[in-house]
Image (tube, helix red, strand yellow):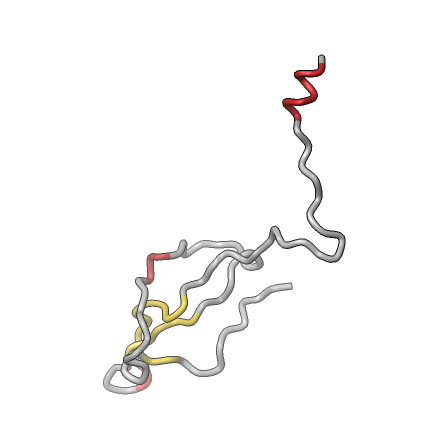
Length: 87
């Protein structure tokens, strides 16, 4: 399942002055689709709507929590060094 569906409307810096804008390069540009969230892009208005440019992120993409556990709970980790010490 891909999670690349973005928001319907762009969020502009001029309309959201109270929000912090993070740099564009705070996350890698080439990243796997399923393991990162979409984030919220920060756009700057130009003279007309066709010249809007992406200036950063209101909420940068982050890694998804792939290590969460379901109903069964966390799996016990094997202590490999204990196995070597017994021999």
